[in-house]
Amino acid sequence: MTFDFTWMIGGPQGSGIETAANIFSRVSAKLGYQIFGKREYYSNIKGMHSYFAVRISDQNIQSNVIGIDLLVAFDAETLLRHAEDVRKNGAIIYDPAILDTTLDEIPFLEHGEKARLSEFLVSNGKEPKVGSFLELAKANGVNDYPISFSGVLSEIASEQNNPQLAAMKKMFNVLGVSFSLGIMKSPIQPLLESIESVFSKKPSIADLNKNAGNYSYNFASAKFTDFNYTVNQIDKKQQTILVQGHQGSALGKIVCGCRFQSYYPITPASDESEFLESNEILEIKEDRPGSTTVIQTEDEIAAMGMAIGASLAGSRSSTSTSGPGFSLMAEMLSWTGINETPIVITEYQRSGPSTGLPTRHGQDDLLFAINAGHGEFPRIVYASGNIEDSFYDTAKCFNFADIFQVPVIHMLDKFIASSVITCKKFDPDLVTIDRGKLLEKVDGDYKRFAHSPDGISPRSSLGLENGVFWNTGDESDEHGHISEDPINRIEMMDKRKMKLQQMLDNIPKEDQAIPYGKSDICIVSWGSPKGPILDAIDMLKNDGHEVAFVDIKLLHPFPTEYVKTLLNDSSIIVDIEANQNGQLGSLLRQNLLRDPDYYILKYTGRPMTCTEIYDSLKKILENKAEKTQVLTYGA
Image (cartoon, rainbow, N blue to C red; front, side):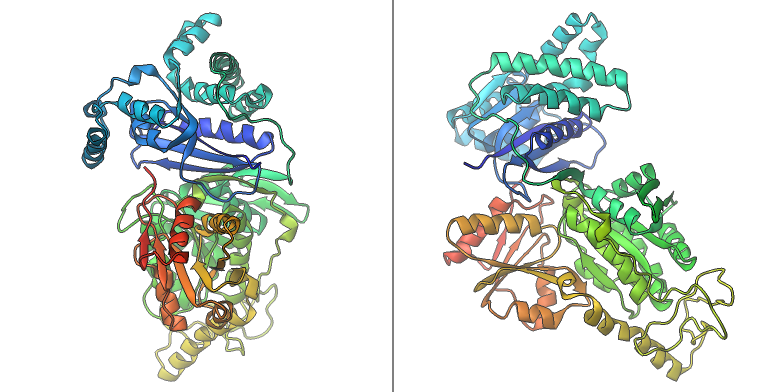
């Protein structure tokens, strides 16, 4: 029988939610389970509601589901927001002191949310207090496990003869995960090892937390013995690593020879640059030592300028940003276009417009990435569907930039950046480096923008003997000197445009779009919905339904002819993406002259679950669906 379990921990922003989820994920991975974790948080620094859901299974999983099996509530708001989602036979760990809290006493609960929750309680004949949500959950078959976090912490302080511990509420995170694993009867050793690993840089703190974890585990396992779920050691199906989203692209940059990254801090992109800063020198292979210079600049305009400068010097360079920062880079993106400068812009999308939902998910920037900048020039827009993809795709993006001498916009997003998963260990041997027509030696008269049959000119770098070249924002001749001659203008515009066909001809088909099965009904999507879609398709297979899926990775230039062949066997197309307008659908209309028959969209700022997609596809299969279904799950 398949084991599939979702654990969630929630509390105020800054209360250690991520640390607790990190420990729980490490323990589960050590025991052999597959992991998919997702962090959600507000854009303020501290105080408002934050939660982390970790799904574990003995099967391959690539997404979260609707529903919770064990909820750990640090505070009243967590209980009222998530108690309804706890499944029958699941459980809630909570501090009994929060039960009499009224909705009016929860400081950060927004007015609209408060009104909806009050109406929900009134309709169920309950008082507007937190304990009412627990009563409703218990009526639905949920177990309740009251534990005083402060009381247990005081007992630990007394046992260790350390009164100061009683006031260290930061340790609630370790208590919460230890209570959970005790109730689930997990082996304790992986818990202690994981705590030690998380706090490895501070041995004394690690010891305190291990002692607290041991006490809390024993307390909960002795007091609560009726929970139906247990986690024991299982056989691993394959060698896996536990990795967080931003680490995939960061490691990809190190392995593929990116040696310069500039950035200005912005959520959710900053985590990637901070990881690179922490691992600036990393031995990859004997013939490929890593040493990446990472510069935090005064703004995104400077970040783009410094990355361009590093590229002109011959280095593989990149910058990492999100939507608002990418907007500021648009003018210099055009400069790279006219000067045929290879550069990779890693674009971690979030919900707009403007700052929109700064810490929430979205796929709002697709059409902007394709059309950003003034004037017409070739670029590549490329999307990764998950963390494992992002590692290998990052290397491909740098190869594309060098080979075709264009800016490459690598589309990731907050869903990927904030996810924690188990996946196959990344293999550097599968990463190749192709610098294209980058010269090591120049003889004779060098023309940086020389005409060539494929539209791609031999590229010199700054300081290369005899490889002198000129760059300007104006149109230029073959040497790079400014020219407004109309015939030269036509020749240079046509030269640059030739690259678009070169991309379609030379980028392997499996790197343009990936088909999953054949069926009369076919999903088309791009980026992070990939995981939830594949999980939903597996769920439908269990019901006896076949649904195909085409994951489009090369979004510009659009692989029109190849995608046409992939959709030949399908009369119904379903577009699934995380934006309001179905931006991929507009690309299908523009390039294939074909509209999607159905849209499944989500633009609440919360990522899709496979459950939502499964339910929506079932409606389509049963001819009960509206043309557009908008998904809403998530607090």
